[in-house]
Image (cartoon, rainbow, N blue to C red; front, top):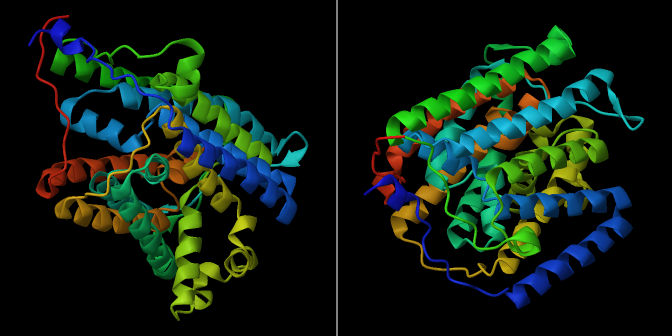
Length: 409
């Protein structure tokens, strides 16, 4: 197969908007936003709708951390990783000066900075394996559930269970050897921290280019988009880089509205712990919930929890995006090996996220955007977990995407 043949776009089947699903998603977003504004606060409703915007961006840009790492590991295609570096570069440029000042629009803000130790390394490595077995990361699980993936409902349910189990055990893991939280912004200052981070992002992107050209002879280009202009904006698909820019800006908006960056999996621990209480367990006795803030979240409504309402918004935003794209069509047949991988992977995702103080969003994206050393350690450990997970996938009948080797320029 020649390089030109490989790059030729496949014929695109024209599909119409899934009107019932779009109307349901729109109604739930409007009614849910109104209810949250009345029951909690207008700002909480804004965060719910901000979550919906994140879900729409994730779906239309198909911005998957899991698939991006897998195709690079298996096939050295680096477009997804380069998009992540763009996202992180924009994020640190926005976040670092604000976090150094401690306020944004007159309101106090803080980053997500966590300790670095055995718990983080093992948890991130476990999370990385779970990404490939479960078929998604934290953000990927939510947006594919919203897009109609029945298999990912299994991953999400196990993700929630694993998060609750991790919350129950975190006090033991956090007692293992670790360094205190390290903020590169506070330790080095804004300008040196920015310079080092941007240099590392550029080096990672350059390395992916070198390795991709070595494997394929050139950078692999995506097929032409089936839509242009406003139709593409509303119905997708979006370029990866557009998704990267939008995610960085929306994370900054999360910082402005909530006082801290975007996170996802703390809500899963909350939902799982509430479910544990319903079946007779006593999560209130776990040290994880002993502080006043977490205890209030456990005892209160999930609608008062910022992360929960944003997660609900992500699912509905992705549902709206998939309906607009004409791609919302749930399939209920899941092979048993794939279902088993989804459950085992989901448990790994949930447990690993609690041990590592976050996921691909709270620890990797928002952690690095916060200047946290823990974010970089998470990235390295999770990458090696993804490497192992990619090798495991075929045992469960899961695809590992590879293109034929190419030569030339």
